[in-house]
Each structure stands twice: as structure tokens, then as C-alpha cells.
Length: 362
Ligand SMILES: *[C@@H]1O[C@H](CO)[C@@H](O)[C@H](O)[C@H]1NC(C)=O
Ligand SMILES: *[C@@H]1O[C@H](CO)[C@@H](O)[C@H](O)[C@H]1NC(C)=O
Image 1 (cartoon, helix red, strand yellow):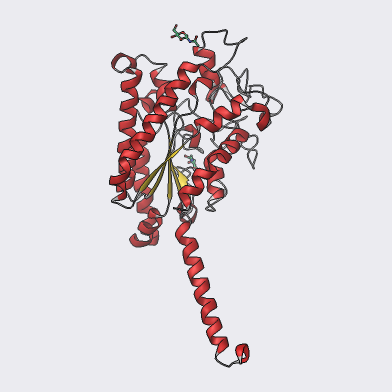
Image 2 (cartoon, rainbow, N blue to C red):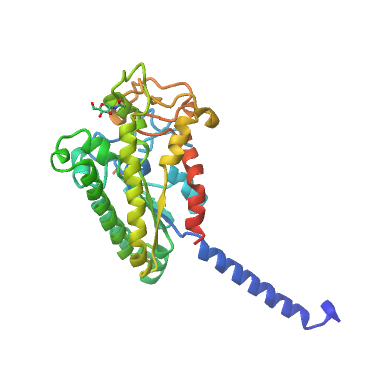
């Protein structure tokens, strides 16, 4: 009787087989197939490397704390938040730039970044620095799909794209590089109408990605812009050297934008749901302001200048092999006057992890 019954073993094997079949299927239903990223320098791993632009970072001291200790074109000393995300969702260790011509199809399949440092939602923003507009990033994504289709077939590609996680991170340059710095948009837009303009661009972009097969789309909000060292240096009313501190006015512009963005995403949700798509908001303002206001808790001891050079203004070509570098970048929130250190990007990843869990498990 029982397990010695001659019919039990095949039956048991059958159940074991079913169990494995069901559980692997369930697991693959939950997991994302790839990470596909669009936007600016916060998520650009080196797409600008071969462009004629000042927004580059494929030289020392950038990359000094990366695994290879080599500059890659990432605008930081280490890894970007999207690299941590790629490892976390289990697709790959680091997310490569789409324009790296050495990528194999297999490497491309698990994810790439189309992002370009200096880009933004406003078409004028990438033109100011000759970088890749997000519209062009979308074209590259279409090309990417075609390359996958010719290697793997239409059906597999479609399924693969449907299960990918899409992240869009842009908007900071529209204010810092464009609106605040160049008196073109300011002639025609108030801060409030410029917000509306950017949100309209963001919404159209989300819709285009959905039309191309994206089903999980995460949109990153703005950081506390008034805390970026370059903004403190250029726009603080107080002494930008002796009394450095976040410029509230600029951070509040980011907070207003983030509230409106969340609202717009909610409004878009029903029509996206008709296509089986869902859009999510990723808050980076909260995690970053926490690091800045509660620095000791995170092991930081410098939150208002960058580690590279004087830390007041240097970024991209101004942070270069001749620049001095702080002794311990992991004690700094900012690597250069605009971009977080790898350590801050890691903390930022920790700060968005619960949102990521929600995204990958629904
Ligand atoms: C830049 O150009 C070199 C040489 O053609 C190529 O090997 C590399 O993949 C390109 N990388 C990027 C990111 O454009
Ligand atoms: C800085 O000056 C501007 C205009 O002069 C003013 O609107 C703003 O409130 C001031 N900000 C601070 C933090 O004092």
C-alpha cells in the first residue's frame, strides 16, 4: 500500500512535473524579460561617447569606482540606479548603452539604455548640447525591435517587449540646462505653462512606447533641483561658497511638477489599461532629499558640493583628468556638480525598491 504501490511512482512524478511546470511558468510570468531605458544622463551608460557634444564622461575620473575602474560614459564614479535595477530584476549585471556596437543580440535582448546625457522632454533641450532627443531614442528603440525580430522572429520579440520593464528618466535638464539658463523658453512660458508643456511631451512619449508594445512603464519624477551643487552655485541668493544650502524655490518647482505628473499618470491609466499597459510613478525626490537632510544616517559627510574638482560647477568636460578628486566619493552625495555618486545611486535604488517590487509583481 501507499508509496510501495506500483502506480504511485509514475503518479508522483507526474505531480512533480506539474509542480515544476506551474511554478516555472508562474515565475516567468512575474519576472521582467528586459530593462529598456530612455532619458538623460541619470540613466545614460555611454550613448554620448561618440557624439560631438560637451555632455560626455568617458574619461577619468568618471568611472573610477566602477567594477573595471574605467570610464564608461556613465556620469558618475560607479554604477547608475538602472544598473542596480537590472541586477535586481535579474536580467543582467549592468545595463549597456544601445549605441555600443559590440553588443550581441543576446546582450541586447536582456536590456539596453537609449538615454543620452543632456537630453530632456523639451525638443529644444537636446539641441542646446547636440545630444540624442528622446524622439530619436524612440527611433532607436524601433530599430532595436527590428533587429530582435530578424534574429528571433516577430512573435518572440513581441512577447519579449510586452514583458519588458520600461523606465523613462528626464526633465531635470529641461529646467537646469534650458529653462533657467537660456532665455528662450522663458520668453514664452511661465514655470507653470512650461510644466504643462513638459507633461504633454511626457504623456505623448508614454503613449508612443505603449503603441510600440510597452506594457510596464515607469516614469521617474524630478529630483530636488534646488539641491544640485550647480544650482546652489549659480542661483543661490546667499553666498554660494560660505552658506551653501538647497535653493528652495527650485526644489519647489520640482515638487509641483512631480504632483502634476502623478496626477497625469493616473488620468492616463484607464486608456493604457485598454491595451493591457500600466504606467507607474517612481519618486526620487524623497530618497534624495532624505540623503541630503539626514546625511549621517547614510554615511555621507558632504551633501552640497561635488567630489570632482571644486565641486561647485564641474561636470562633464569640466570634470576631467586634470581635476582633483575627493578622497572618499562614498562620503559624498554628489560626484560632480550635477550627478550623484555611485553610492548615492545605490541608496536611491534602495529608496525605490518597494516601488520596483510593486511594478515587477503586478
Ligand atoms: C563608439 O565608436 C567605437 C568605434 O567605432 C565603437 O567601437 C563603439 O561601440 C562606439 N560606442 C558608442 C557607445 O557609441
Ligand atoms: C531669492 O531671490 C529671489 C528674487 O530676487 C526671490 O524671489 C527668492 O524668494 C529668494 N530666495 C531666497 C531663498 O531667499
